[in-house]
Length: 207
Image (cartoon, rainbow, N blue to C red; front, side, top):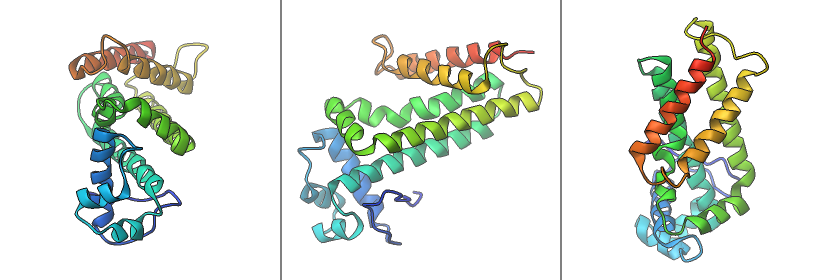
């Protein structure tokens, strides 16, 4: 497993592998029991470390929660890189990139019965960081579309639109698809919908 890079101020630097175990244990507990009902004692027990070890690496429970966000963000980056390296058509790779963010990466939380509380916690603790991660992902999509344009696989955006605007539309549509009543919780249906969005975007930029 790749070492978790703790960028939030509450996490303390260490070369120990234990922060990974703590973060993964907390991810499981928050998903199963929610944020409020999960204590540092619970996290320590699930991670099989002493309570003082948790505090050695993380200032408090909020810092652990933020480290989970960094972990999930890193997972998205790895899946994006794999999608970009994959073969196939432009639609194949773009749908893979959309799936990297909106597919399995968010399933762990989205299937939790405590999702409303977790979303509220994300909003309170990490709204700015989530915005940063979304901006990073949108920039990656835009870079990918420009690379397709540079290699001649697609043309430029339709008149009146920029690549950034197309990416923004894709993001909003993918988010709507993920949480739509007909798709939510159905991985295959979401995959089909994301591929449809990728097909539309590529068709709009055909030469």
